[in-house]
Image (cartoon, rainbow, N blue to C red; front, side, top):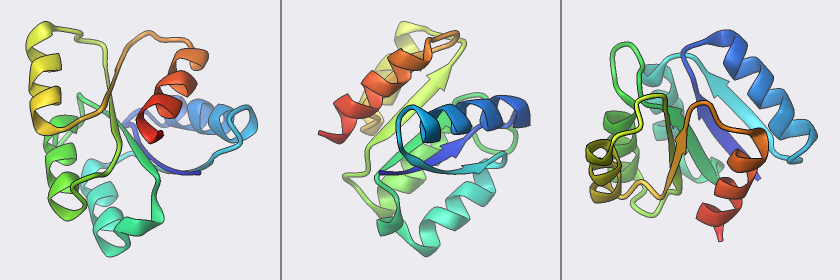
Length: 120
């Protein structure tokens, strides 16, 4: 499974990407910029099986990135990660078509389970 992982903190992106590759046996393409991630996705939307994005990103929030991705590929499984877990954000994410929600901090096993849930 190929994952587009968008996280503006390089250390977090690196550690979680390696864990997903080693323990989840997934191929991860990471970007620290939501704008770069959207450009990459738009060039080849069928390349990815799931998108994982942080909510709090410079230039474009995760919900906006998800909305733009879903305009290109409406059934794309997307997981939103956030340290600001609010009911309003969950409602907004669900209304946009985001299928998974990860509250920070979360365990690696939680992330793997959510990936499995949204890709079914």
